Image 1 (cartoon, rainbow, N blue to C red):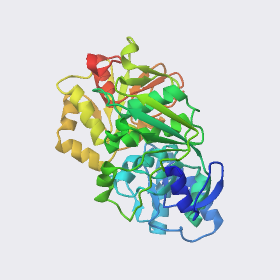
Image 2: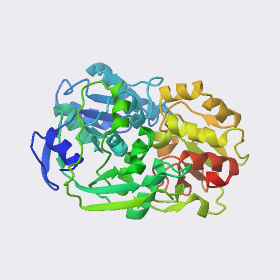
Image 3: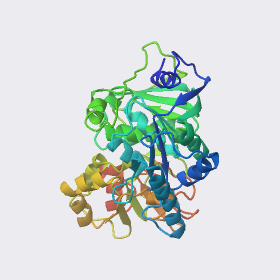
Length: 417
């Protein structure tokens, strides 16, 4: 079996599963945020139970419109707050302690190898980077898990992406996943497990692996997953909140299709409007002027990302015609960036620095676009109206491209800055 099939089989108390099979499986961790959890809470309370299945296995994070941007968002967050107190949830993360959910949970040691994780957020597939089966679900599915601790799944077929070679300077995990989505399209892995392997993957830090699995959903994937290695175990060993189990695909595991890519010549990539699959190398875009640059989100708000961006922008100034918004993904990342002088570097460059929030990524706040404006962002989605006005545009890239372009005033390859 593949790693995905092994995890699903174990959580369904079966010796094996096959693609297309429907199973009921035990959930190790369930996640909700300030947009999706209020619907789940309402559905849960209509079911009638007094207590959630496990107060240590349900995590609530107000991060999308938090800190509250208006009265409706304040009401949404208050629903989470009251429910967390009522249920005495161990893992409710208030403003000042919270972060962007998909960066926060791995940091807190809550998402672990071998886990089966669901979240009422499409980018829950992030945690596959640690060797977990992790996928997004609807709010009523979250309510069912809050009630029972179980959920049904259809076992997905698996695709394997072997990424060979060593990445060139300024190319990152973000470029790997943008390139792959560009190759297979936004429906190329619809309801399939996307398994990533090869030396280009094993050489990546965990932060970059999280970025890759985060965007599996942008190819239609049910989940993204990377088999744990020494880096994974080193990452989780000191912070794991509970025991975990390592799974790996069998050598004779069957895949619907296997892809082989040479990443040794991969250039920094940019996804142009209005699909993550509309990908071109940054150095082939010409003079595309931009109004805003955002560095952050669950895809690229890690300390690794901030270091790369600061390295590029250090000693330079943001172009006077645009604005640069930097959003560390968690409080711990913010503090580490402060210690390392990264925030000072961004401030010296005349960037704006925000407390952790999803904010502009979903068109929430902290950087909404006006009509006709263009934003270059390290976020994960660039659909029509994603970051504001329906006649605005979003381009996706890695932090080095974002920082270099913030200086140049238009989209550039950082190697040519």
